[in-house]
Length: 455
Image 1 (cartoon, one colour):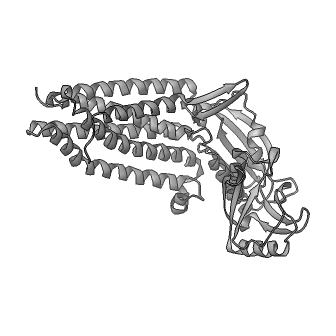
Image 2 (tube, helix red, strand yellow; image 1 turned 30 degrees about the vertical axis):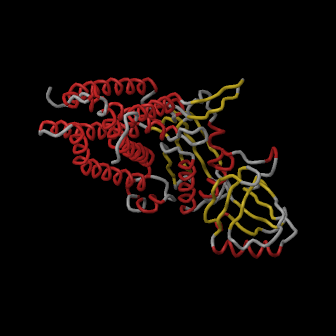
């Protein structure tokens, strides 16, 4: 590592303090009844059913529709994808094939004290069939199955939100033929029975790509509408429209009071651990505590979504367990390094040599431990996460026999674990090393006993 200047300690501390303040308290602006959130805080975290409660919904096909078992299974799979696309990971989806019913349970959104289940389940039951038609009432040109991928974005020409489509090879051929045949006419784009837009065809489009825009002015997409449309297209269309038999609110199994007690217990445990490592390792212990605060702040930021327009992750009890496990790994990494520095000083090394050697000799063990946990977390997220993700395509078929009831809980655990491990490495190795090398350059802090050596 290159030489570290004296001010680096204060720079790193300032960054960690800023990250901690932003991740816990957020940054928002209120004007009248409107609230604009720039940075999300801990209060914006979406809590799981086990902590906050949620909604119980029963879906069924229309009375005149005789759904097959394959269609019911397909509908269940699409509902799961739609839930995960909204970052609702603590959900339970069951299918009763005998009565043709799908039971869905998912958590309340943070801040919704007057929750309306009917509004919450509306999008889940929509067919979400995307079609391209000649003019506004002509035959269908393309369907959602002809779209390989949909992605929300911004049109650089007018800064309006759009949905970009990448078509399959067959879809690209159909679209090229249609646009070549309909030059000077319109192609309308529909979601179920609602026309989204009807742009004019200026020339043939052979690229296999298309763009959906809501129009201009009041008809333009918002960021949320563009993302929702892209998610529906990627999730696929239901084989039939789902009707809501009943819905109700469900009570939490743990409750917000127990959550607050857990947070308090965690804070007390963190304080005791911090006191112990400071007494035992002195300055390296202080640096370790600062790094651990940064690790926790980074984990909270990734769970809340941090940025105002980013989705929040659903935090469950297993998710909290993942955070605790990653903090334990962070403590372990800092203790190993601090102990090694202490041993190097006892062996007669200079202060700079002890710090460099301490981090170099422990790096491999810490790195291997972190990589191992990342692999474990990745397998859990792949096996119990959305089936259309990269990790899901790799692992979900292997572990499908575990059953769907554990999906949300285990996915939440894997997510918080992998986030915590990444920040453990960033803070426990990189930030800690920068801070220790920086502070060791100050004359007042160059005494070996401050780093665990003898007076």
